[in-house]
Length: 107
Image (cartoon, rainbow, N blue to C red):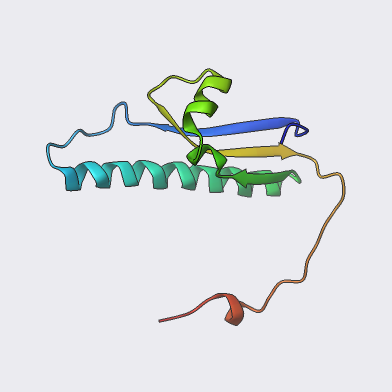
């Protein structure tokens, strides 16, 4: 992680989000924010691949959010979700893809 040329700290903030009086909708709003952050990260990973960059998603901030906020000097209202390293790979690594039938279950 420390050797990567770029590091993206994906975080979410509930500022500007709807504030509901009931717990069910509050939890749904939180889940939508988490999903939106994850989808933005996925798009970043796909774009990096398209440009020939290597990238790696790490979910460590979920386990140590206060440490990530302190080290990166992030506002307390930001909730770190992931770290993504970006750069050119030192070497190309390819592995054989498993058949789709071994990875997906259709119901």
